[in-house]
Structures are given as structure tokens and as C-alpha cells.
Length: 214
Image 1: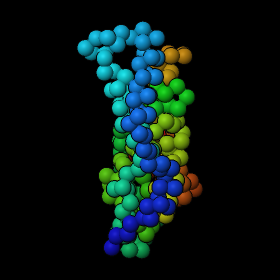
Image 2: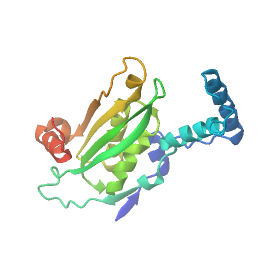
Image 3: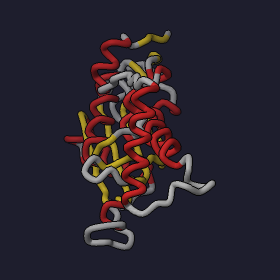
């Protein structure tokens, strides 16, 4: 048996806005970008750059498609667990899930990978949906800490599981291209809900399954 989540409730929980930017406004944005690029030194009168402002706006829109949602996340399946002793212990873990995002502070990219785990209760989702969930929140203007919070809360709202675990590891170009200009800094964040918050053994097993060192 499968069930579909209510689209309106899902959109509200996932922060989905369904963007619709008119073509006239897109052309206006392209002219703004052209003015900025030219002022900063780019020669826009070459075969390679004449379409650059247009390509930039299109690339930026595509890279932030997380605001538009993902209808394939709306289907939830009945759990495979039938009340046995492992129902509150058996983990589903997926990773590494690679993602790319934009830091909302400087609009420079950060990228990395995630491991997502949960302990099913009444519902499960297809394994590929965990990748879709990560990228739904990553493809926005955001920060790493928020992505993790949104993943654990989103999965919790969708499945009502016994527990959710998320580990994120990312490289931030805002610290490499500007500011302190670190060579290869890595930011790691963890997020726990439900059984993972109170059971150190579950957290340790999550790290082991994921191939991570505590």
C-alpha cells in the first residue's frame, strides 16, 4: 500500500515557493548582470562572452531549483517492518549523497556530501528519494547548518520515523576564494532526531555504516 502526501502540506513543510519569473524580468536581470560584469573588467564584446550574462542568470536559476520542489518526493510506502524486535533498531542509511549549494552570505558555492539515515515506523520512501530530499534543500541560497536541519525535519514530517540522522561534510568557497583564503577547509555538521538523540549505540552504528570516524 502506498500513500501520497498532501501537496499543499508538503510544500509548506518543505519551504517550496514554486517560482515563476516572467521573461521580461529575466531580460532585465541579464542587463544588470552585464553592467556588473563589465564594470568589474569583463569584455562582453567577444564571441565567448557576449551571451555570458544570459548564461549566468540561467545557470543561477537552475542551480537554485530547490525552491520549486520535487513532486517525486510525494509518495510514501508502507513500512516493511511488521513489529519485530528490530523495528526500533534497523537503520536505512544512504550516502555519500553529493550536493552543491550557494552560501546566502556571499552567494559563493559550497559543495560536499551527506549521509542520511532513519529508523522506519509506519512509512518508508524509495532510496533515491533520500538523494532528492538532500538536493531539494541544498539547491537554494542557504547555509550548511540549515540544510541539515531541513533534511532531518523534512524526513521526520514525511515518515514519522523512530529516528533520523544526518551528517554533512562540505567545502566552502567563501573561505577559499576570499577572506582567510583557506586552502581546503572542511566543515562537518551532524543532526539527530528521535532515537538517535538518546541512544549512543545507534549513533555509533550510523557512523560505522557510513564509513565515518567519530
